Amino acid sequence: MPNPLPQDPPDRQSRQDSQDPAATRARQRLPADVRNRQILDAALAVFSERGFEAARMDDIAARAGLSKGGLYAHFRSKDEIFEALLRRALSPSDLDLAALRAASPDMRHFAEAFVNRLYDDLMRPDALAVQRLLVAEGARIPHLTAQWQHDTVEALVAQLKRVLARCVAEGNCRAGVATRHPWLLLAPVAYQVLWQLVFGKADDAALQSRRREHIALVRELLA
Image (cartoon, rainbow, N blue to C red; front, side):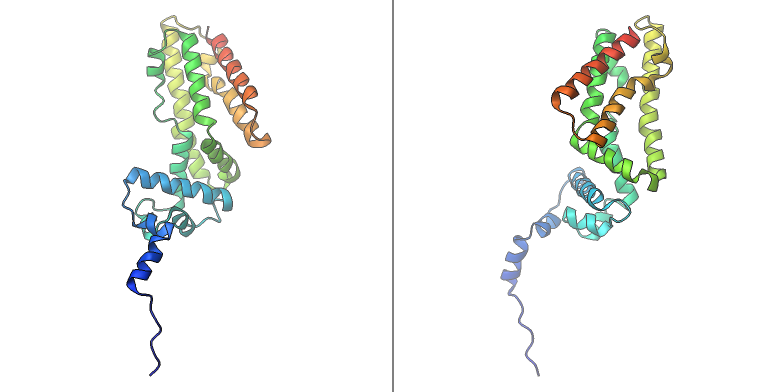
C-alpha cells in the first residue's frame, strides 16, 4: 500500500493560520457595526476596481477576510451592500436642519453651518469614491439610485423647505426663489462634486474659496 501523504503537524498548521491576516480577521468576533464597516470598506474597493456588475460576493468576502457564509450573515446581496454604501457615504442621516436652525442665532450663522455640513459630508474621500461609482454604475442599477434619491436627496430638500417656510413665517428670512425651490441652495456643492469627479481634486485654496462663496450666496438669497 502507498504511504499516506505527509500532513502538517497541527502546531505547524496553527502557526500558518496565525500568520494569515485573512484567517485571523475571519476568526475574530467583532461587533456588528465594526464588521459592517469592514465589509463596506472592502465592497467599495472591489466595486471601484471591478465595477458593480463584475464584482462578486466572493470577492467582497475575500477582501473583508470573511467566508462567503460570513458575508451573507450581514448582507444578502450586492444590491444590499451598495445601498448600504450609499446610505453611509452620501446620506447625512443625522443632519437635523431644524435643530441646526435652532442652534444658530440668526440666518447668517445657519447658512454657514448648513453649507459647511454639506461640504464636510460630501467632499470626504470615501464619499467622492461612492459618488464616482454612482456616476459610473447608476444606469445599471436604477432601482438603487432611485431609492437613494427618494430617501436622501428628496428628503433633504423637503426638510430644508420646512425649515425655510418656518423662517419666513417667523420673519427671519424673506420669501423668494430659494424658499420656493430649496434645491437651488444645494446646487453649488453639487457643482463642486462634479468638478472633482471630472477634473480631479481642486486645490485646498480653491475649495475653501468656493465654500465661502456658497455661504455668501445662501446668505444673500435668504437675507
